[in-house]
Length: 436
Image (tube, rainbow, N blue to C red):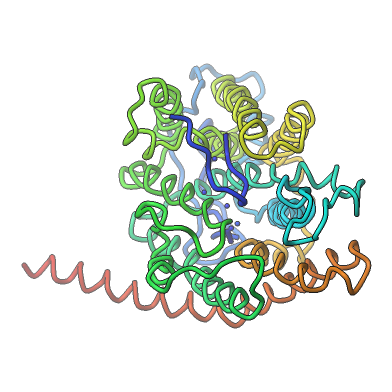
């Protein structure tokens, strides 16, 4: 989640059928609109920029009236690509927390009489918190838009091998731990969730269980299946080398097929293009192109189309799964979020450089993976021992601390080991190929 993977479903029931969480820093590139000399970056050796004479998208080639002002503007766009986007780190953690709030006190499930988590409708216990948390599921859509942005950012200038390695070391270490942890909690604290069979738990370690018709150890893992399909599709662009034109064409083709596939009733195509989540990822890709190359009418059009398709998916999700929030409120929240992402893309949040946000971003993915089944099991045991609001805050705080421990003592060491192993394996493949 660095981390997410979408009408999109809540973790309670998985994605509906309609027929259906800090990644690497940017390499510096020159402005595509105006050739610039190489400049030093803050990343040290290996990250200096080159330059290109290719015109920017939409650039007519005409001479500008004020070359100095134009060069300064494009240099500023280029400079934005050199900095870490701290605002996204904070936004990811905020999205994860509101998703957790939704799962604990904002779902249709926890508002039913005699539910196993609270014992009675949560709207009777915390009416105001319930009304607010009922909209927390939108954090998943936020994850997907950010994922499109961050994946495009972290893949620019990378080889397919580097893209594959980065995804493996980012996704699997914390995920493997989460499977073991969640299974253990369900065994120790039974009564709310049933433990999966051993063969199903083992298959979950592949992260491919949804493609095999096997249930997730934790219901929130359904988003990972959406993420994996996005990575698979985007790999086709990474293999050919990322450029502005290729990413724009990819967005347009993916969006077109995502609209056609459900109408055609072609299940295999539906599975591949993920029409429920496609436009959220596409929005993130277009916003990153804005960030890297500057805004233009075509990119605004893609973002606008993503908003239009997204509001439809929000309504579908409310009707089929959530049933606790309004379409108007959901669209308003989604719109505000997209406007904030536009501000990030255009550099208006560049002054946000609080170092603690880096840690916040690192906590997001492990927190998302472990919070749901384990958290609701803990709440069901402690619900009569303290004020319910204090209990929810305490559980979230506890899982944030656990997430820091996972990141420091599980995720980081395992990622280093996996990277060394994969680098060695790919080097052996390269050498074997040259010798054959």
